[in-house]
Image 1 (cartoon, helix red, strand yellow):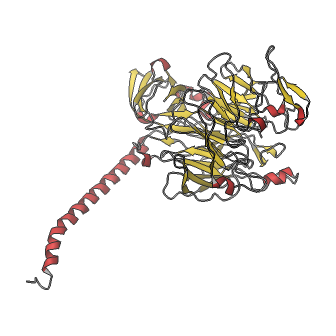
Image 2 (image 1 turned 180 degrees about the vertical axis):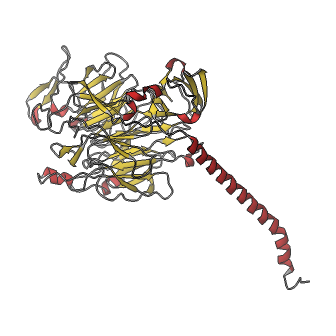
Image 3 (image 1 turned 30 degrees about the vertical axis):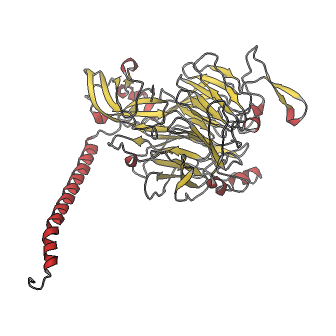
Length: 585
């Protein structure tokens, strides 16, 4: 039987299917409404948040040590509030002689049979509380090496030049006479100008180096690396003679893969299967790694939007400055110093279809540092406006630090700060301190220590005060009460931080951010292992009326976003950070 020409089978199918279609349409409409409501609610929250406290203060400089003795080519802040600072034994002199009774180091003069004595320290421990230095003894050359802080607070330093290119060094500065332990011939390939990065299990991967188109894993102390894994990207991005792919920019991302940026190209590498799992768009405009020597940093990784699953965590990085591929060769041949690049490029590594987004810095920069600040801003500091890395290869120091605010609209993110008066060019470095100040040292653009030169070897050390250290902001600055704050953290667990604040207005959850900073190994314009995490924090409780508060935060969810080890934790009140407190996860 037919109903008005309609096939009966199809009629019955329609009767059965129609209610399901209606139900699904209603579900979709409900979720869209909910999602819109959530977005609306989120924007409402954003609208009611008080903005960061603004200041007209553009930073200031202070000379804190007139002669530290060793030029700061490599720097890492330790959990003991000391900096380990070193340069190279190749110079054979520094301005810091070994103390009486410490034996000098014999060496062969220019590959002859003539044996000379090196009686100078090429490494030191710098006390950030007293600005005093203690000489350290490094004997195999760590010149242009890599490094990182292990989970137990040991600095692990890898590679270097000549006799040091397959070396691994260790130092813990937890005692008054701690010194380097050196293990030679550990790697399969030489690691000179390589990048070292910590993995989720607390081990280190070392990627690249001059003439080494591969990576290796740092073995347990005293053991030997079993294998070097060939990485075609490094071979394919080597510019003839100039290279421009040394000290690659390397970051661990939430899925456990390693992001590797080399010269102008980047990939995702799975360190377990040793397979390349993704290739990113080319960054046009020039070369970014040593010796073109651009800068790079991760933007703050945020957990304050309930985004605890691997796929929900956004990781965005920035690459700024550098030079054209032939700048190194031109400088070397005395054909002039090409102008450094002026662009900054951002890319969301975790985006399914990532693209580079370009903007311009206020000035050109090569050989600078990009440091994460505790309040989520990034500081671009040191460097030159023309030329590249290597001795005598740069000109026109870039004296002016620049503050980059990643959350501001494009066109409003850069702010020039108070210029330095000391040239900080090749072999300079900097470090964020627990005080929020920036430690700035180094600059040695020649093949030895020179007292008299257009750019003398710098052993003076400075502090730079970023805008958030404006004295007028002191009343807004939180002070962590360490005795009643938790310092041992476990992944995903909640913990409390106790702090006081002078400014008496009632605080809400939105006024306070809690951030964690991994102290990097900084050399040649790249801060290895550096990351800033913005935690999910809520339930602010007034402990003493108008004076002190406790805030509850959730520790990072897993080790791929926060490798195990020591971090500086900051309480940030509307852009004004406290002093940092050491915590361990």
